[in-house]
Image (cartoon, rainbow, N blue to C red; front, side):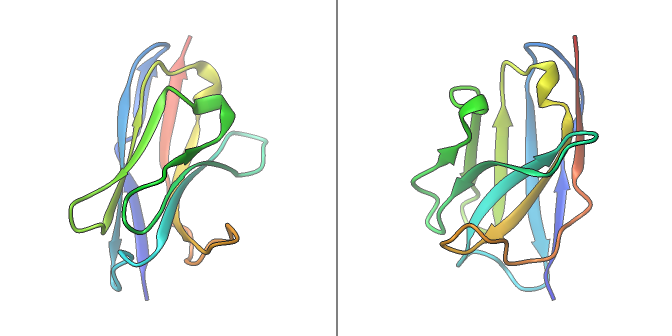
Amino acid sequence: QVHLVEFGGGLVQTGGSLRLFCAASGRPFNDYAMAWFRQAPGKEREWVAAIDDEGTRPKYTESVKGRFTISRGGARNTVYLETNNMKPEDTAVYYCNAIYGNGATALGWGQGTQVTVSS
């Protein structure tokens, strides 16, 4: 069974940056496309960014384009989310997951990592 672990979150001021990390224990996920999601208080979880199994063709939701960058580690078994020029509306718990071609998630959810952007 694969367990996803996210870390790297924290408190940052508006305009600041964080680097989020996603790793897996158990079965590696280097043959999956991977994505980052986030869930703000009182809102549903939303997709943020995705990258294919080879670490190419990143995609982003419109609100983070030009500010966030998704990438994979050399062994493709870690996934990163570089967040820059952060805004208070980026405040959320951030999660990673493997995804199928139709965007459906493939694994159970980890605990996520809290990101708080102060104004």
